[in-house]
Image (cartoon, rainbow, N blue to C red; front, side):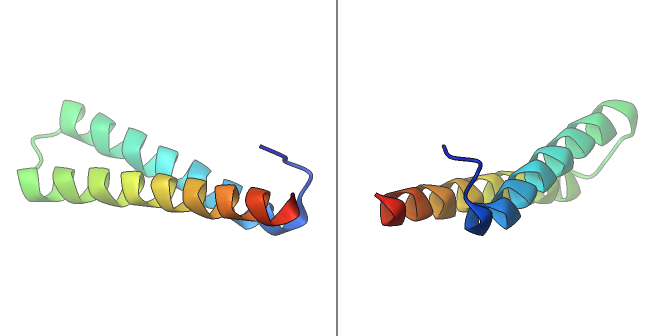
Length: 65
């Protein structure tokens, strides 16, 4: 992946945000007794952000070539 592409920078931020949401969700499940709905929602949002940003970055990479 080419990090020098300025059009991809917001998607790298979304990928980082998804990773942060996933890690906070897992940490909250470990430390607190969370409802399964809330834990699953946090994991789903985090994974969705990461997959969506990876898809958009790969599309931008194909457009450059």
